[in-house]
Length: 511
Image (cartoon, rainbow, N blue to C red; front, top):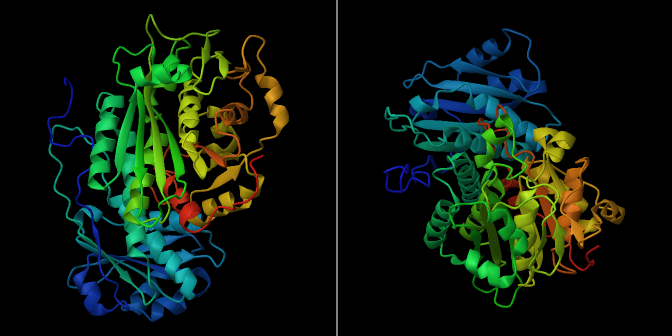
């Protein structure tokens, strides 16, 4: 295909990653001689005491006391080791949140030259056991994130990466499999979201996803436009009418673990707009420039099902990826069109740049037909959610009021923070249509993140628990927490915490 990279697998990142080596019990002179760099977390209130007990303790304490420092600060020290190792010290506050630990770890890694490093140690001193483990995991996550290279198309060849291993230094056990799987999945989201739109169109996304599915033993099926037309997916197909290439569709991936026969799956749904011009209601130059990232929701759903399969999650999982583009053209859909979704709901189109909720409407309705145990969707859906929360949080909406505490706690513990927004029934008054069952969006745009969620709720099967995540934190200038790039990969860590650490409440009917 013209414009495609000639490399063998241009749509997926290279397999080589730093290895997570077996843990060492303590930081020693011999270990530092074998490493080029190390991260060490110490309590801010007892930093000198903790550092004094480490190798080169006097040197470390002297550097600490050169200037006034506070919790959250970090500084580096060149050590007189055989490898000329650089050690970076991070000062941990007694009440640091998981987000704050990730942010501190990210700032510590920035002091290091990972391209000149083969081995890096991650250690803690003077901290309680649980806090020590949390710091180690934050340091490992930050190192993985910093070591990962996004797609690069410069004519000059990049040097081969030297960074080979991360060495945890602790007597505390860390879950190496989970750390590696979640980091790799987050980096996959970052990679896919960064790909140029001439590489990752709907057909390219489908090829990449199917290749990953084969590697990980997942089943796949694809609902192309012809099949969607037979199913009556008028909302999805309205959006794709302007595309010259007929490659849009809904890709379904299935993970079925042994011993889970008969169990209902958790359904992950992702918005996968590989490029969004705004359609007939054309975006401005600045508004359109980064719209190749509008498929981040599908990247989160794809990467998450792969991570869950690698971690042998005991419940079945489905992923439904709504892969499309919102293009302009003589056949493009337009305001005041009336279309019918898979579940029979008629929709009055108001604004063609509200395309995400259109493709999700039919995808949610299709996913609901399998009677899942729960539906969780991810989408870069509204600018209103960014206005409400900034890019530091993502918004969450659910038809299960009893999920709020669990959802927000999963965000807090994972360091990918979410805030559950209101979903009261009276918001539906603004979505009444005089000519159809519902309007696609309001004219004014205020509170659009809430109205979008109320719209989507109509397409989730009755009594199916549902969580919608509006990914306002999918991109942030300068990165977020431990991730140093503008594309954050937000979503995988949150979902892993939600499903692996927080069994969702059952038994309460959907609101």
